Image (cartoon, rainbow, N blue to C red; front, top):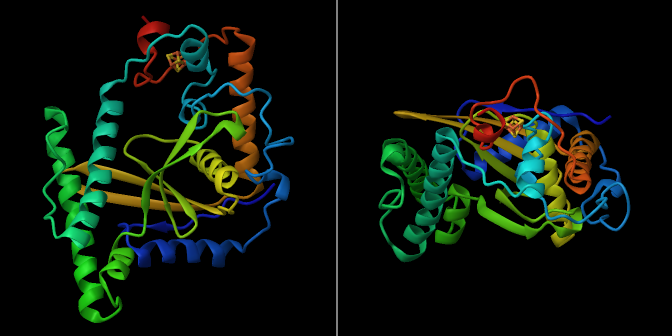
Length: 290
Ligand code: SF4
């Protein structure tokens, strides 16, 4: 078994210095154990990375393990039922969109001088206060860091100042077919690490991060050894908690096991049944628990 190495930073934003510090802490405290080559994403032509079948399943449908029996997969891919996202999921989507827009608008400000204007009209009315609070917070921190690195001479130009302030490239999409998945969209990639933002309860994040990392490895043939999970709370104020993981053997095997179980549920077309309890936020709650 490999180790999961953690670092926690209560004051994480998104800047280069903060991400670098987080990753450095993981390396120092946990070393850099080698990842077996057969568990790299580019080893998709042989087991265990090679999928039992290529069914195009979405990574988010199984990697976080929100349905203990995998019935969500049976409903979605076998019976073709439509999910009904509950309010927390819709709010999470709205906040993701606000965060991505803030990061994109920051670059527009840097390169074209366009002021950062807010999360936009597309945000549903009920989520606007939180989306605006998040957008304003991210904008203030990024603009503050940008002006600081320029004024202090740390950055020699706009491009490097933008990199210091916002090094995360967002919504990186790759073809998940080598792993038997559909398109895989990572929230972000920075300094060779994959980044996921969460606004609600989350579990198995190490396995999910390993899945994103392996999909990127399969597409680009470059190693992704670390993952960062950023938990964000927005409630008037904004708080972050970031945790870095070394994506070695343990998380990769955990991801592959979940992937193989998901493929088995869909390929067998057998109803795996319901668990004793289900999260009310499950988008299939209206079917299983009605
Ligand atoms: S309601 Fe329960 S059994 Fe049905 S998909 Fe959701 S978690 Fe799984």
